[in-house]
Amino acid sequence: MPGQRFDIEIERIKGDIKLIRASIHMIEFNHLKHIQDSISTINKILGAIGFLVASQLVIALRHLFN
Image 1 (cartoon, rainbow, N blue to C red):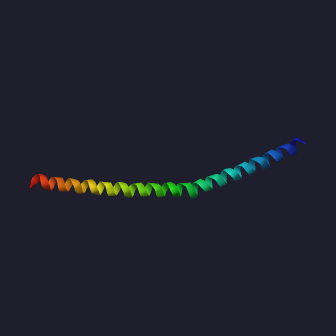
Image 2 (spheres, rainbow, N blue to C red; image 1 turned 90 degrees about the vertical axis):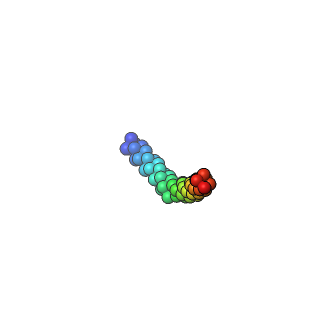
Image 3 (cartoon, helix red, strand yellow; image 1 turned 30 degrees about the vertical axis):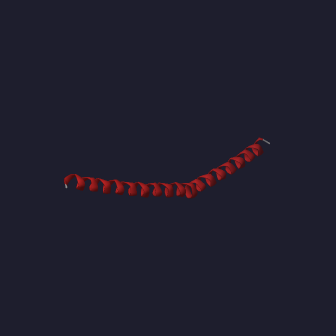
């Protein structure tokens, strides 16, 4: 009887491990992809802002020295 109880507990733990693996897989292949896309978009926006600021600086320096 105690051995059967341990077998049931082991099967429950195996089921929990499968659920954890499925959750990790979902995070790894779904959520991280969306986060990566968001960071890429933010980097593009920051690059554009940096370009605009540098352009304004060049224009200001041209007017300053003319």
